[in-house]
Length: 514
DNA sequence: GCGATCAGAT
DNA sequence: CACATCTGATCGC
Image (cartoon, rainbow, N blue to C red):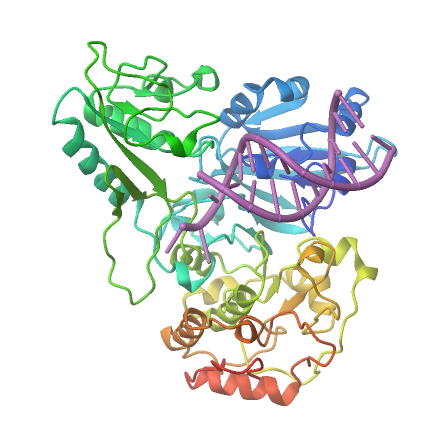
């Protein structure tokens, strides 16, 4: 679930996927896709009022997202303020301060995100550098290299920051079977069932969210049928989807839902209450699409699991796996990464570890905008001023890193003390807290050059075998007691040495590994 | 009565 | 099994 506060450090006058609080003052809005957790505040009366008096404030999104959004009457007031942009067409957008007339020009490009219909990533290029807001995404390994607008000529653009969908950025979710694999398996299961008789019916137990449409179109094509859904309204202008769905209950494949019963459905009844016209009882199986994952070493097993006499779970993911995210980031080599899902506890630990090990970035900032907007809400500890033995230079991207312009390195976060850990901690405060983690400080060195899977292993193993509270709170985690200590220079040197040697760096039993 | 927020369920 | 959503309780205005 996204906990991104809405603004990017580099371009605070634009708000993305958040429309409440500080975002009420934005000069332009961006919606990456039409999931509710990315639309917070979007139907708020305050925003509605603001629009009434504004000539310049717009909401930018894809055409599909616009359509889906406006299919809900609660967002109708946005209609005259939405600017739909074509995919992969860099567009000059001028942010205007309506009070002062001050202008700021940006080039914004929508990149397909593969998360749900209409979902995009926003590539923003302007005076403060090139940044990528991923929204939610599912891209396969190697996809980044196929996105032309992430490149300039033959090389990757210099990306200052990636605002990342980090939902599965944890080695626990190392691998998620590909879309193709999952679709193939689901097709097989459906085939096996519906071919038995005309009374054999499949119910796809999907959640109330966009994102399953490609499953519907795929199954529809395969079985020359349409899928029964609750409503077609939102797909009116999307013939590809529209042609594969129907509100006619007389079909063998259903994805209809009922607001009430849900769990009450499986064996006998469909949410829509459909039954065969001649009174013959339907034979119904339910298939619940949900995420399945496999560890790095885990032999991948079945992507379909039987969960009952007539119910199955099938692998299906809207988000990239750990290895897919890693591939994506390693390719882009951004200077900063801002995870949208704040990795708490062990997740944070893992997150930072791996950024160090893979030199995918210089900084990992889990506070997102908090660093900028709540500077006084945070106490920072002094940073060990000893240079660290590390480098963000990747052998495979030496041209990229070598060509980073000096300005790109000038980043507020780099100037802040490091590592910075808030003295008071608590889950509920995560948005307001600043927790800046710097995996390195632009120093040159190659102590980590030979790190490969060995470094990952240590994090992975530790992560998978840490059941206790104390282990959940370890090294880079938020300290829960006043006497927790920030690693000193010696601790860090030792950590880096051990990382370079491929040793396990996080103890299994202790709460401190440094 | 509406909205924000949280716990809980699915 | 960890997504995204909905519902209901509670609180405040």
